[in-house]
Image 1 (cartoon, rainbow, N blue to C red):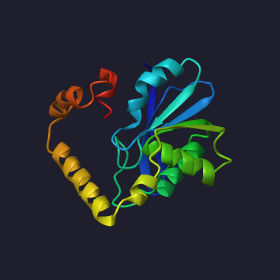
Image 2: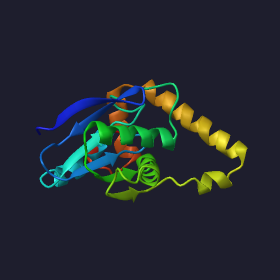
Image 3: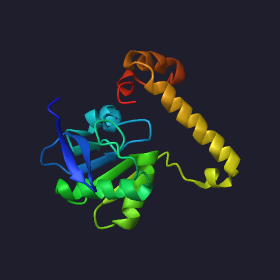
Image 4: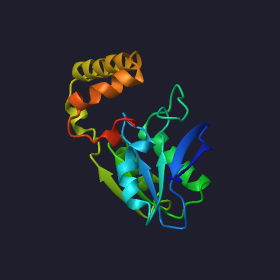
Length: 178
């Protein structure tokens, strides 16, 4: 493809993005916690003839900066507001998955003048976590941390080889961005 890539400086960090470009209505895409912007590739391939799709790597993901702090919904929403402003997007539609859905909802609520419409896929509403005991939340957080450490010790090839058994319904196009 002839997709464009670039970096935006906003909120004291640099965010990487991939964009289909062209004089078409913009659609901003926000990925989930374990992905990067390119996880949207299969969808964007279907939309790119009609839309200028912008896939951003959220802070701490993909090719974007990894600051020590600043991972709240408010921080992510401010980052995407910075992307919209820096790219001069005219009220894009925005689609978010999981963590990106929380970001999208927060952005729409706190920056309503920046987006035209939103769609949320599998938003991680906190009600289930809020009902958990502090000990259960701490155990889940430690399990997540251990899993991240384990994955960081494996090669890319080992991680890619493990995906079909863990996620049998995923298409091969989803492996790399994950």
